[in-house]
Image 1: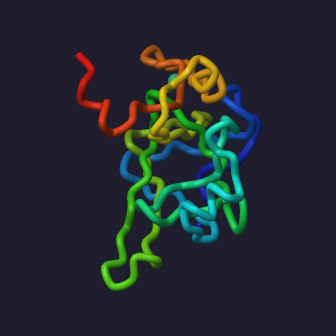
Image 2: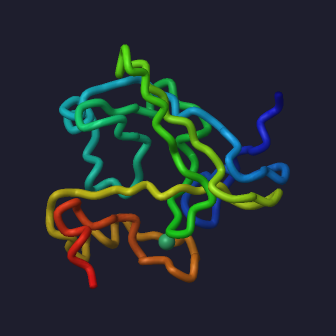
Length: 160
Ligand SMILES: [Zn+2]
């Protein structure tokens, strides 16, 4: 089956992935592919915190899918504060390393719309102006927070 999306330049950031057909909610679009590396290895290879973009997808606390190597179009899907897609972890109970991440539409998507999901990026450091600027969000949603960063877990429930 032909994929109902293609990669092209995005007004949000760099390349993006755009629907080439109307896609109903709940459609499995694409697996986030890449080589599996440990978090320690990712830290060693990439200065992610100050890069402002990422081709890494955290599978769990220990394992990361590295879309820089063996990645597919999924790595070009941008972050949005009002995403139309969501990544689901399909766990393999016998072998966690065979778990897969599939990106699915969260709602009906119209032809021409850019696909996006919430990256849920958080770092366990204070969010300085500089860091927020590096991770600036230009998704254009009315509820855009202006940054791709979400509060660290321990801060998430303290908002009013
Ligand atoms: Zn935004």
